[in-house]
Image (cartoon, rainbow, N blue to C red):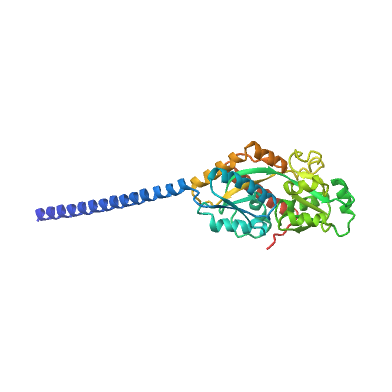
Length: 350
């Protein structure tokens, strides 16, 4: 009886061993198949990345033709075409404080043939001021900071003031307050005017436009008295005497407008943070393509001829920040913007 029991146990042990061996072989076979599949996929992907680009590339801008983002995108496109040997098409997608252009990138950017040139405020400021259909920290990735720039407060040349203190005195005399224009609702041009109103205790009423050019037309025409604008678009009009500059939102005086004081000099240090423009990618675009475009952008925007162009536009070159550094800056700016809007009682727009 004991012998039979021992034999039975041996049979069970042998069967178990065979089962374990078979399972191990199946696992090894599965791993081998996965390795082969991965090995086949990697060269294909690597080949696609190595050949990039094989067709025209799209650069989306979120403002109208002639605006600051459009100007920078065309400058970047020149460098991309020189280096990548493919046409680069700049497409304007204005409106919704950048959301239309961002949605285009979300829909078409995975392939690595659609990118976006936009200012940081569209990600750190606009989502605080209105409902948006994107996550600023998940749906797009900053690749390279192109420029740092400030805003300039400009006014209709025929109004009876020449300086910021004179404007504030003028505004206090207007029973219904003073309208001011910005290039987009919820961005720095908008909130800077709101903040000035709070600090100077004047009634500033916002009028939003789809980009700087149409707002500047109304400013020159006397339909809007003042505006917070990007230096690039206002600079030619300031130099030609068609509009006048009152102060700049920047840590220091701008080289292109040395005669125009900063808000800090005039007693409003809260209006000093610079903005920046960058080229952005869909986060799921191939990593090698993202790196290639970053390298092209940083190299091109360090060329002497490009630096001279940036200076003529009233801009300083961007800093070679990493994606992580730019994202950290955006998150901090977003936190401060939320606090600012809360402090001035701003209610987000639907």
